[in-house]
Amino acid sequence: MLRCVVLLKFCPDTAELTTDPDTGAPRLAAAPWRISTFDEHALEEAVRLRERHEAEIRTLSLVPESPPRELVLTALAMGADEACLVGDGSAGEADALATARVLTRALERLAPWDLILAGEGSLDQYRRQVGPRVAEELGIPSLTQVTRLEMEDGRVVAHRGLDDRTEVLECAPPALITVGQEINQPRLPPVLQILGAGRKPTTVWSPADLGLPAGTATADLSRVETLEVVAPPGERRRIPIEGETAEERAEVLARTLHREGSIPSR
Amino acid sequence: MNDRTGVLVFSERPDVARELLTLGRRLADDLDAPLVSLSMGESAAEEARDLLSRGVDRALAAAPAPPPEMPEEEAVLAVLRRAVTELAPTVVLVGATVCGIEVTARLAQGLGTGCLGECLDLRLEDGALIARRRVLGRFVATQRLAGDADSSPMLATVPPRQSEAPPCDSHRNGEVESLTVELPPVRVRRVETRARDEERVDLEGAEVVVGVGRGLARAEDLPLVAELARVLGGVVGATRPLTDDLAWLPTSSKIGLSGRTVKPRLYLACGISGQIEHLVGIREAEVVVAINRDPDAPIFQAADYVLVGDLYEMVPALTRAFEELRSR
Image (cartoon, rainbow over all chains, first blue to last red; front, side, top):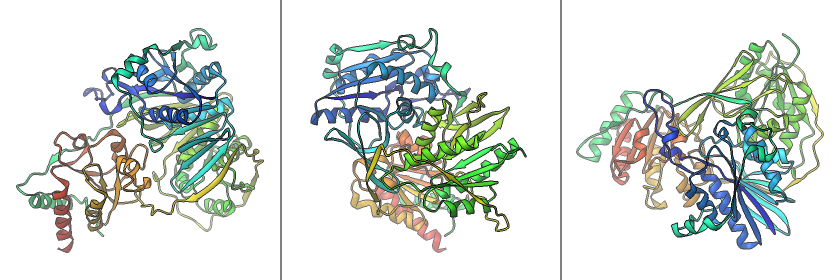
């Protein structure tokens, strides 16, 4: 039985994020949430493994507040057997160190497992630190940039795609695997399946349930502090290039770019 | 200058290690402490000598070179750990390559500390490191990592191509110091390595980049875009759907959050809708021209020049116009 835990982050959908015109700050409270893109691929990969091996899949998420119910149901409908949530209001401010520590505690409660899968980084922060940090904390191998994952004779076989090479790594489980978008195409479930997933269990823990001192906020464990988040100045000019024909417009643009020095000389 | 190592710089890529020296020197001077470099691999000694000629106060070369069946990350982590233990630096700067990001995160967790990742800029203030990095797509966060009473180093990763390497000065020399590292037993075995023989375009260094997205109907139409790039002396990049899903171009051509970042003088987005994934990769272009049939495409929010139109008309027209300009 292949026991998989997928680290799944629910986060603001950065594609739908607007800026406060006065402060330049992101309007986080107004943004819809989604499952972090790369984590969807991680969950899908667990589901694919289950097509070939007998497996159990649980998701684990650190959430600042109850995530939208339909997102949890989506994860369950995609194929997770159980969703585990660690609820902590400060989770949004937690750095990678703190996040990894709290997730590790939860993973210890979920032990034993063979594979921990995660997206290479989150959609909103994209630090690419939490996965490797969790592996380090658990004392298990960290295999990142995995583009193909197999279990062969009980061993983990991971194909990696790197800038200058591809390689194949293998090790004994348990191991932590991080994936990008190349590994698979997530099959998002139809609405009826999402609604039906409500009968699958969801477990909710507080940090205290995981043995952290009462009143500990995840963010208290952080070492990196975020002082400010703003949209950088210098928004694009958005100048329309008009003209009757494509030729005319092309000429206008070419001349404009040339005049402003945007075309490097050959 | 006190003897305690101020700043340790490292990248498993020698070109990136060289780029870290300017920032490293500034921080080391702020700390009034030495700048130390670390090199590893088969050419460690040679790279260490090069770094000495570019101004580091001490250059370490790790030995032995790791066996090929040991994954690079495992070897790098072991070497970096040993160097940190040996030198007790105040600051460690690591090149933010995929390997560097992973290894520094694991090192940081082992030390129980934080890491400022992919810093756009970095400075010391009252014993803390302050840096800015991109978050939430287009936003920039300012973050702070305090120095530690129990003297864990402050860790930061810095993306490639943010600075120029300082020049070599042959008058500067010194002794390369050997750092003997006991490599851990192989727990993860690398059983196969294959160099990517696909042509890897220099996207990061290009002055002109032409990006192509799903507006292109067929792989066979790529020459249209390639021709525009050629006339401008530029290179072609693409969005995720074209590289990862359709595989019309290798993944090394992907520009975006999970791909490469370009900072050309001129970027032309052809048939690209403008998803966040891609926009993150072109933020640093000086000028962005966008061509798309859909007037509501998000790319137009991120463009300096807006051309609503069919790329099959506009791209050849632009190619002719730039060609004409060139011949004048």
